[in-house]
Image 1: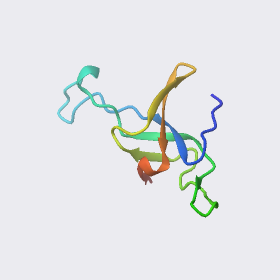
Image 2 (image 1 turned 90 degrees about the vertical axis):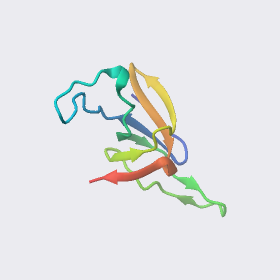
Image 3 (image 1 turned 120 degrees about the vertical axis):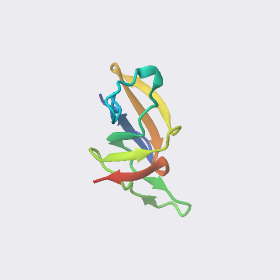
Image 4 (image 1 turned 45 degrees about the horizontal axis):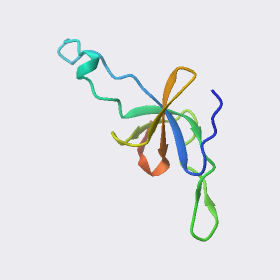
Length: 95
């Protein structure tokens, strides 16, 4: 995959959620929600501020992040689904 997002956009690959509950019950795909965790695969150059300077992005490629449930735009490249979000839609970087 060769993608370079613009400005403060970030490309994320969703992480798979657990398919089994804590009690051992298998959860079918139709009953699961889309995961809100993912791995950053590409970042833009940064956000252009009102005074014309560019603030670099806070996340980097390889970071595991939490993002909003309904954030971003889903795209499919080379058979893999990705999510393109603004950096502001990312809530946290997981350690």
